[in-house]
Amino acid sequence: MAKGVLIHNPGTSYKDDVATRYHFPKMYLDRIRPFIGDRILYYQSGAKGGYTGTAQILSIEQDPEMQNHYFANIAPRCYIGFSNNVPFRIQGQIANQFLANPDGSPNRGRQVWAVRQISDADFMKIISLAAVQPEELPRISENQFEEKGQEPFIFDAHRSTIEVVLNKKVRDRLFREQILTAYNKTCAFTGMRFINGGGRAEVQAAHIKAVANDGPDLLSNGIALSGTIHWMFDRGLLALSDDYKILVSRKVNNISEVDRLLVRDRQALLPENQNHHPDKRYIAWHREHHEFQAA
Image (cartoon, rainbow, N blue to C red):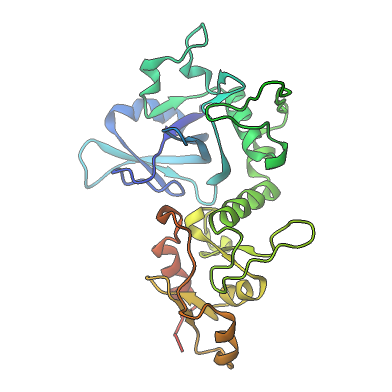
């Protein structure tokens, strides 16, 4: 087994889903096979890109609809998205040394590969930076974690991958940070945005497809909801339509009171970036799981 890096860009023409499968052409088959059973990092190219998340490859199968293409299947409930992208360079050095020449300059040939290998040490360095609290990170310039006079960031290379990557406390925090950032700490159903005296947002990060049912910690499987609304959503008293209208269940015995809590037009308040909107597969699962019937 070996760890790897897979290029994934939003809006790609490939049939990717970072939480379930990675689509790739046959030319990368031999490169990706060693990653089966081990962890990979996702990398997004471009000026605002960087390492965006991690997952574990379970198996590889041929695409039945597209010749000479394959899927790398992702193990259930193993995808973790990073709340802050880890950049290509860390303190002036290329984070994945596989992409560097002996003199430290970028290896232009390997940089165009969509499937790359990465050492355990470089993998752990990136994971450690993704897992720390945002206020603990060195200040960031456009291309690297570095600012003149900044003390170097020291990661704990002796902590195991399992401790860092799969720790539930870290997973939960990263998911919450992603959701609250995307929704500007605002409840999507009520429009309320409360920040307590300690500066912490009162809104919660709700899974749409429940964790107990293998719902991934994916931005498109989450939505920001206030405490009471989150409770009602988890119990199927509230739901979303495919066009993101807020639906109230027939089981609610005082619809007028609930209606006073919701935004007037019952249109959920979603992030400006459409890539961050709830996936319609997950909101359909939520309705079907709760046998939802609108009032």
